[in-house]
Amino acid sequence: MTIALWALVIVLMAVGVIGTVLPVLPGAALIFGGAVLGAWIDNWTRVSGWTLGALGVLALLSIACDFVAASLGAKRLGASPLAVSGAAVGTLVGLFTGLWGLLFMPLAGAAIGEYMAMRNLQRAGRVGIATGVGLLVGVVIKIAFAFSMIGIFVAALVF
Image (cartoon, rainbow, N blue to C red; front, side):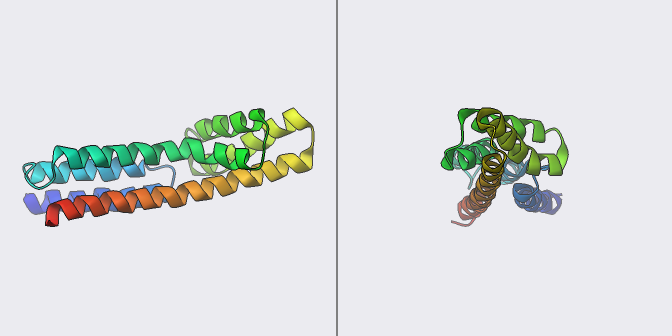
């Protein structure tokens, strides 16, 4: 039974890493769930509450990346507040529309917001692209959080 539970920990963490790239899966939450399960299997002896607390903070920061990355990408280009709000609303709407929605709704929201504010189609397109770059940077940061969480968990188990 213990081997099956440890296998589940590995599966949860592997699917969590995939979930950092595929927005349909809650990557950080799966990795954190795997860590909690692993700590429970080990009777909380090697993975402390402090370690799980640190992993929880990293998971929350990773989740926040989804909302912040698109908005910061637009803001970096000097987008209007309406474009930044559009990127945030697009991210929120994208969460409910699947993979393609989460990939493109923030870009569309930022572009629509910028167009409404400035009435310049070319500028709106640039803001949409900047939002996409922000999303890519967010994914890279989420991957770093995911591997950090796994590394901290493994280090707590081994050392």
